[in-house]
Amino acid sequence: MVPAMETLAYGQAGFEVTILGRLVLAGILGALIGLEREIHGRPAGFRTHLLVTIGACLMMIVSEYFFLRYGGLDSTSAVRLDPARVAAQIVTGIGFLGAGAIVKESQVVRGLTTAACLWVAAGLGMAVGAGLYVPALVVTGIALFSLLFLKRAERFLKKDRYRNLTVYCLGGDRCLLELEETLGRWQLRVVNFGIENDLSAGLVRYDFVVIQYGQSVTAPLAEAISHVEGVKKVRIR
Image (cartoon, rainbow, N blue to C red; front, side):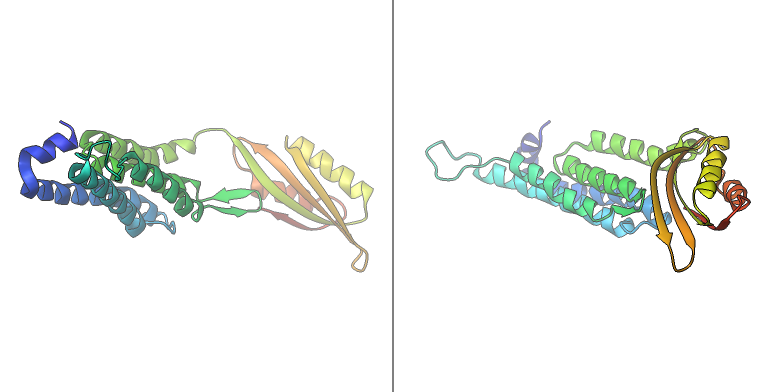
């Protein structure tokens, strides 16, 4: 039964009870996802997700209420109603909130999962506000499964890992050649390279961005590079 039929069946009092139920359900579903983010120390956590879901739910309820109240106006009326506009603006608005959770640090981008959670939370609020309870529950279950279990499964996957390698050397070309040979032995592919010559200190700084496949070997790699002749300092991040 569509929300309009549901409202007409129960009347104004029934509609208000339905509204309260939707808001509570939206808050619970958003809080479940936010709790996982809160446990992992993310900036958008329990309270943020709860507020996003109940806010989106309330906007959908208001949109539905306007349609029910003024939807009977004919084509000659100066008032034009389009309930879909509210949903479209929610999607646009949540994009700005999600963008604020994304942080780029050098080659590492953090916050994408949190931004996606906020986007899903807004969708949950919209679904509950529109009376789509079963889809909202299913999406909540899938989201929690992804956050709680798939993250653990990722640890067993062999995947490319990007690393920033900075090496300070005495000397020039010879040290660079030995560094490239060492990276080759460790089966690391260089995707970006930079060089800086400090004449006052007599040091040459090499910046590598490398791709590391499979298991992380950061500490052994730093140890191997430190034994290259002329290397004075190594930093991997």
